[in-house]
Length: 142
Image 1: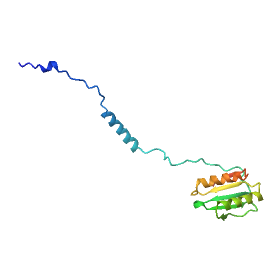
Image 2: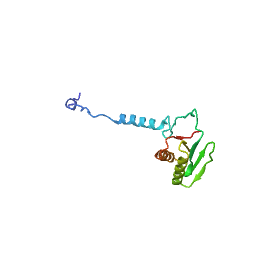
Image 3: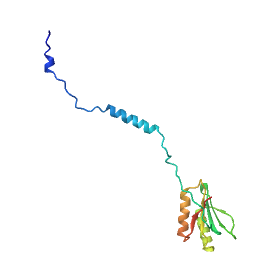
Image 4: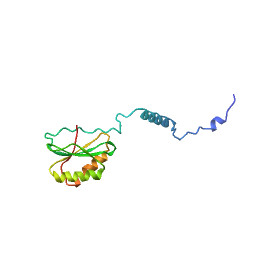
């Protein structure tokens, strides 16, 4: 029998390092799952609350209309009013609104914004009407 002297003197060294390859595999699988599963709600979709009609809509009011591409209109609706008239720009609209408010100070202002109009245009008109001293400013709905 041959005697191997190397078996006695050599000891196996233990590895004291953590093997991270399985953790990386698990993380990549989780990443792929989260990327592949579609979100349940579209983040760009905004769900606005529905508004109910008021119990008594005003009989006489001033209408401001904002359409797509910045087209603006103003009109006085009511028993003795007339339809909407287009105006050239925002300053002309504000001048006409000021004149209509001086002529009819008790009329509320209803702003109707087209679906394709900019939200900022409607908000700016509300702000300008409030600065003129018009207390009753509302949004027209269908």
